[in-house]
Length: 141
Image (cartoon, rainbow, N blue to C red):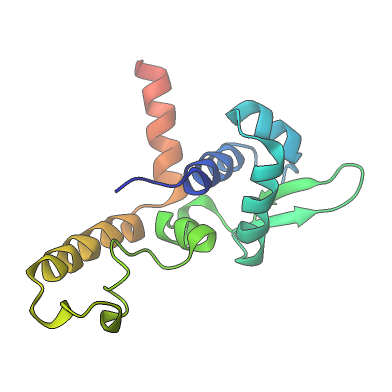
């Protein structure tokens, strides 16, 4: 399992916002440059994050983005699902009819258990948790 570029960039971009002072409007170009993410790609990702309410878009000359909620109210699961939709390790997990081996497939059962644990970890951790870990690493590293 590997994050898509959109998921990776989305997490890095929203993490950058989380580390800013609350209500400071941050231009997309600043986020893009600071995180070394192509600006056009980041714009598409932030559209998804904005639609889900995780970030707020501000138009105009001094436009940009702020967080839509406090960092401790935004789970990693919410971020990932707003970018890519529901998280599944295999297509047949949410839709068993996609696989003719589904009823007797031991691999599906194992991956369903793994997926459940993975999603649980994403749901339990927030943007604030990531920000805290990053701050701790920069202080000790």
